[in-house]
Amino acid sequence: MRAYDLIQKKRDGAALSAGEIAWLVDGFVLGSVPDYQMAAFLMAVYFRGMTFEETAALTDAMVRSGETLDLGSLAGCAVDKHSSGGVGDNTSLVLVPLVASAGVPVPKLSGRGLGHTGGTLDKLEAIPGFNTALSEAAFVEQVERIGCAIAGQSAAMVPADAQLYALRDVTATVDSVPLIASSIMSKKLAAGASAILLDVKCGRGAFMKTASDARVLAEAMVAIGREAGRRTAAVISAMDYPLGRAVGNALEVAEAIATLRGEGPGDLEALCLVLGGWMLVLGGRAVSPEEGSEELLRRLRSGDALRKFEALVSAQGGDARVVGDPGRLPSAPLRLPVPAPAAGVVAGIDAEAVGLAAMQLGAGRTRKGEVVDPAVGVVIERPAGAAVKVGESLATIHARSEEAGLAAAREVAAAFEIAESAPAEAPVIRGVIRG
Ligand code: URA
Image 1 (tube, rainbow, N blue to C red):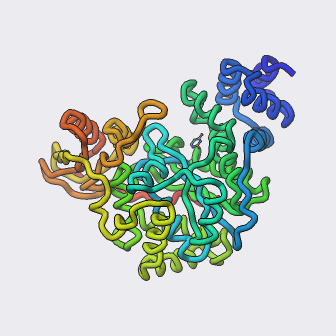
Image 2 (cartoon, helix red, strand yellow; image 1 turned 135 degrees about the vertical axis):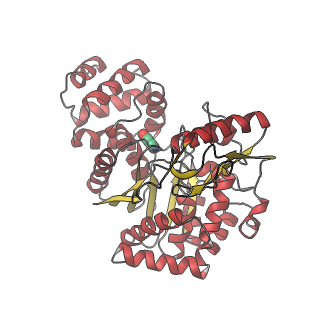
Image 3 (tube, rainbow, N blue to C red; image 1 turned 180 degrees about the vertical axis):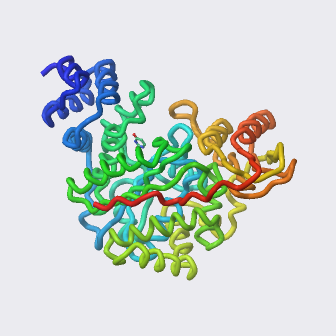
């Protein structure tokens, strides 16, 4: 086989066989297929797409490129969860302990921030001492003991995704449905859970800008999960505005703690209850998502979910005193208001622009491997639909320096759209795909 012929075949719109795709992926990981040929292949996929059989074969080849996690020793149906990436999306911090508190084991392997979107590992590491680098044995043992764990994937798992993603990131081939579906699902299948809930974001702050593109991605991922014998469902949720109020690592941890106390922003709590309701259905603890959501609301009100979060933080070496006293989390030295330039109603907040402003403050990475600042970020003071007077603060910037803070304040001000009347309220949940 020659990489040249496979690139040409895809370029001309033909479908590759599973054997051809496996040959290409194996060769890329071993180094016999160079970056420039793989980049050309990815661009051909970007324009030509892939059949379902090709996407499933690509996912399978990526899973087989490395080690997989064996969760066979866990009692009960373990449910994993994945978000396709958003701004202020701290649902995992709430959902993992919440769902575990209802008796469904949640072994969660998470990632770091990507572009303007935040990452669960960066957020958790804002808690002093929190260790996200668990060995496989420690990860499984913790899920057996307390019902949940959140850790980073080891470099030995799905190395093909790490290499392909780095190439896609610099060749404008990230936003392709077969490439995103295989990237996400290869990691979820390798992570070993029997069931998977996908939160597929759509809107200005997401990789998929429209609900119809998000649906195509969700259907592809659910079909891959079903083919691999995992119970899989996808919820399509809106990401036009930042989720909740906080964007930034420690700020989002504090917001997650408030939500686990029953005092969080309404949109974040509502989304967590829907996603969690589906996780309980997949885990066999509820017959409908509504029944699951009701059970989870009881767990929030009783304090069980908050206690589970405290147990999770302690088990992973973090300072669990932050749960009772979020003031112990790192905080930025400067707080700057973002004054409203006009009176009216907040008609829109560009989530991507707010995510980029937080990234520039240091909450995310502008270069690979950069250390993130846990303390900085943005807190939205006037969410969509709120009335504002001239000069009232739309948001608060948490910054390390005045220069960085003023630059972020300008970007965040430009992200707000102020109109005479409130926009029609759009639902957060845009659809559900069941496997
Ligand atoms: N998240 C991933 O893990 N992979 C993608 O390709 C996009 C988002």
